[in-house]
Length: 362
Ligand SMILES: [Mn+2]
Image (cartoon, rainbow, N blue to C red):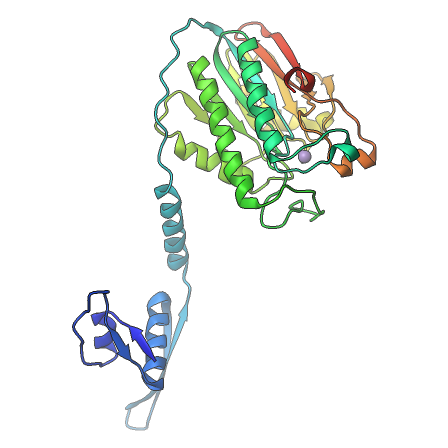
């Protein structure tokens, strides 16, 4: 068999060196024995040697030797480092968006609340009441943000609070990650990933044109447990040179933003329900909670509205803008579709909210 070999490998195999041809390393003929030696050599070079056993004759001459190898932690870390390097190499950081020159109210922060968007879900209107696919979802999201940004106060900062299940499915199979329930999907995962990154970048750019600073929450949901990770990490690298945006890359599914005397909490709702969230947030963010006068928590997951006030905070469960899939429609869940922009004041807590119904942007 003929193989292209570097000079170094050819020397190790005891072959007579051939001058390199124009295509790079020259080809050598390897008989069965040399091929076995080559395979051993290449594999050994890829692996770490963890020990050797030898068999000697009665005069102490080496008769046989076994080399024990393994993929060491060092090799694994090196592989991982190479993978991360390759990922980062491909991302060209964004161009800096010019800071808006219009005056803003320094005490205000606008929270754009988006949950359970289920990008990539397929719903057939005749069956579910409204169509949904990647194209509709992409266009609807841009329309929503255009409308919502124009109609909300000129606050100093925006929060893009994406509360999880932004992607409908999470890998090569269109199933829920934990229970592997089959999902209605449109259609290829690569396409979904591409649109997800593109549309979020578009929304961020729209926000940066109105607000001096933008905070991004990309929460984990039960449909996108892994995808929410690469979404956060990829965006944080893409925007690393943009000083006006902060991205929460905390891997825990509980998130916190403080604004003056306000403390804002976020969690998808797949791990803890609205009723049991308050003590979890306080235990995880004791210091932020302790310094705040106004405390609000936001959650999604169940697609319907619920608001409750405990001794510790106000907890709000949000609707979604997405339509129902066949599973929800046939199961009889019929909650409405909207998304809220909530404005918080550094000293007075919530001061304004706009509810944007799907009918306003369809
Ligand atoms: Mn969910």
